[in-house]
Length: 627
Image 1 (tube, rainbow, N blue to C red):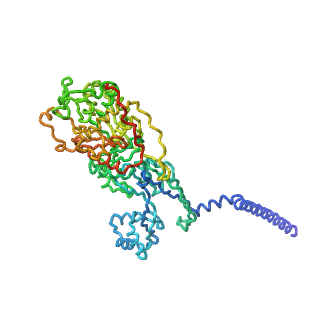
Image 2: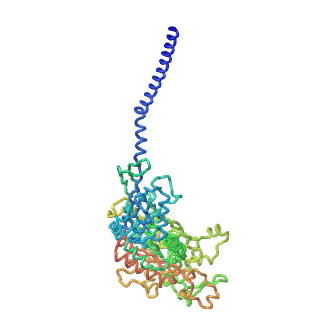
Image 3: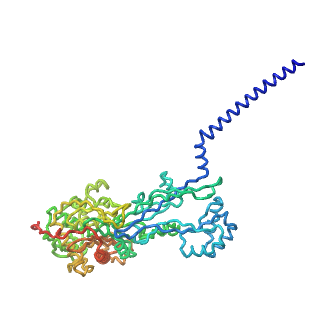
């Protein structure tokens, strides 16, 4: 019995020892695991815990401002007062909305949208009720705050364009980021972030954006914000300073009025663009608030194309304005000199076709400067045939036609200067002499933009220097700082004599008693301008229509009326400003476009924006003997 008891005790001891050893091993493993988690992995788990507790959110940086040449802001940021509602704090939502509707109007569509947003989101997340509140609305809401549980005012920033439609095509606008514009940059996915969609806002978008900031907030397990821990506002975007003079820009846009028109004003010495207007226009502020379907449809379907910057994207036959190019080509090639005379009987014959002058009875005998002043078509038919299309095209290219000017706005078009090689490549048909005549008076396939016309004028009157137009003075600088030095423009290689003859013709066109723009001249001698009118046909006049009597522009449908053009410069004795005006379907250049250009040049001279200009004595050298 004792042996049995001893065996039982030994077995119990062995089992106890095994169980104790197993427990000890388990405790050792547990201690090791605890040590690993608490000591070795402590930093990792601390980080994970902090990431669950602390939420890091991006903050959109303030967008950089845009200034005109004088330091006036043409695009800046203003406070945006936004009304928000936190549903879990709002109690009876319907009753809260009823109380709110007594302060600011809420229609059924807005109420439905608010209730849908509340239903889709967690109740502790704020829902936007209304943006862009006025200070009066903010005041009324704050006074009635006790009766509006869960309702509060949130303050953000919104883009503001103080000059509205006058600068719309220059500045452009900002809008929400579309799916195709996402690049992986998380700041682009912020719900309120806006990027440049057109104009300067698009050209300098990356510089204007700045660098995003961040906000650290403490949240609970459900994601509800407990408190704000830290805030870094980020780096505001760079400011951009333009060459534009806001006063001239606004005046030009107002002067063009409701016409489908455009105008460009340049400093002839530097190439700085002082104004570049296109009408009709649109209010870029409306894009910040979001356009309704009706508003967007009205803009898109307007036959006068308010969304297009016609000054750089509109392409038009230059009409008689192009005669300046033909005259310069004839002078430089030695084909004709200023005393070259042509008899104008009102038309010329070429084969079986008759090419008419705009003056039915003809101009009689004319020399070159008078032919420019009176815009005689027959005279330039004669020059065009002597020159040929290729020589005309070469001079046109020299003056800036048929190619991009690399202007710093999106949407610039190159125009077209046709040549025999171009026609063969495009239409697989040979060039005809009649097409040379058409090009000689700025018609046919020839296409130019208003900005190109202004550049041509500047190059003709600045001593033959190849200035290029530009809009940006500085990025990221104090707007009151002096403009950076520009590299001098190279010479076109055109003789002063040829340029002087062309300028004399332009001066006569405005100030001579028989000039086509005499009625639009500037009366003050110190401000007197020179220029050239142009009228480009939109609809070809048939022989039957001519025989029956040409219908006046004002009696035709708007789309069938001629385009009206004018290019000019001032002051006539020391050129400083060049202007080009194109009025779509406006009729005659002398009656419509020239008075607009005159008023714009008067305003530019009156304001006297700082610029390069032409040094005294750079013009008017003695001419050599007539070719």
